Image (tube, rainbow, N blue to C red; front, side, top):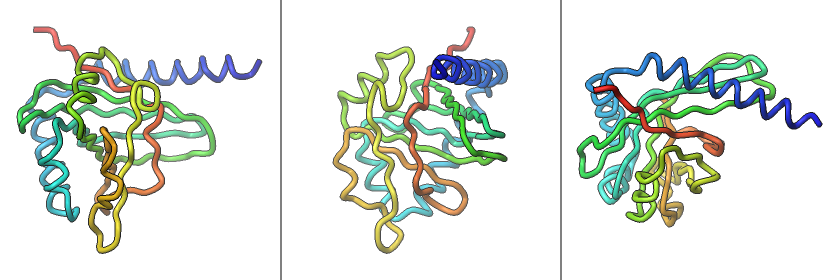
Length: 184
């Protein structure tokens, strides 16, 4: 069967990306600065962002996710979970892909938990995979460059953006999010 080698390849890529990223985990203060900058830019650049972010029970902010590939790709980023504006934990995100791809890109990602029980389930997990452990609706812009509020009826929504604004046609399915455990 060809699916077994492909699954092994995916697992290997994800493990390499995760291990290399975890070995270079940024210091909490650096992540906090990047998270604050990403939130500030998001609020300034996207109409309706304030209302959505303010009503969220929690925000998982990845201020920089890097992706690269040549046929086989991987991505990695570090971020923080904020509740009531305070950082309560640090997380990494990884994903692997296979198919026609060449080059690299970076993006920012904000996952808003609009439902307290969805946030509680996320916090109770030791690892979380989008599309398996929870569905996440990726929000796009509506008319006038503002958030399409008709998409905000889900317990968990995500905003994926770069320096040009919200990105389109992205799926976060398969992204793995894990807590960053720090030695004290």
